[in-house]
Length: 285
Image 1: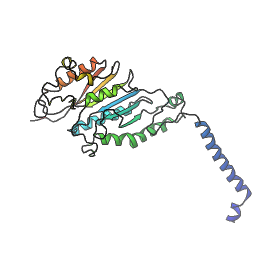
Image 2: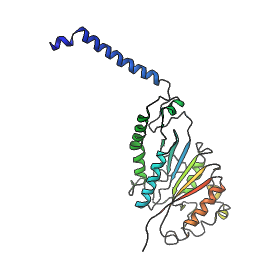
Image 3: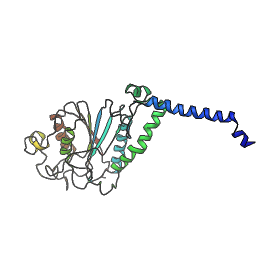
């Protein structure tokens, strides 16, 4: 009886109808998507208008303590959460396997659509708001969070650990030459602001960090000066160190001196600058 029922013409006709509907549905979906913009694996639509933000991450030793790592992770999570649609966020780091005269992003990610209308406006296939929210979370879980974990790790891989260099000015100068850094872009700097390269060694060599108005007259600055940063919004997450004026930081008096120098550096080059102190958190009795 079962064998006869499977061979029944009515049953076969029903199966054929279902198959036709499925194939037709797939074909319709393909036709609907044909010619539409498609995001890459990092959620970016390359052909759509794209605001740019850059994080310059100073990975030099010593690493962050637990409180600093928590503060930075909270900041980075909010940064991802608040990206505008298709805003491209690129992380450029001084990690040992990344630092070079010409910088390239360690990774990048783009802000996700919050509504179907945003996708429709750039010519991408529409999706329901619930699906978009899940898609944003998946991108965070599989791409963004692992990168944040590695950047803020207490014990990074040996090839990433940066024991010696902190070429802050060189990295800023290189980023300033990027075509993508246009007026209205955002540059976020995570650093203790203690420049340490073959050009200048702040806090470690007497006289290497005078007031900026004096420093800018030195021949070395002509090699370190960035292109104009006019109308670039700069936010500096100043990672506090312990022991200013002591061994290792003998020739800088503290955060105010560092903030004064770098504030003048960015203002002189046309940028607006804002500081956020990432406190060390230790209180000695």
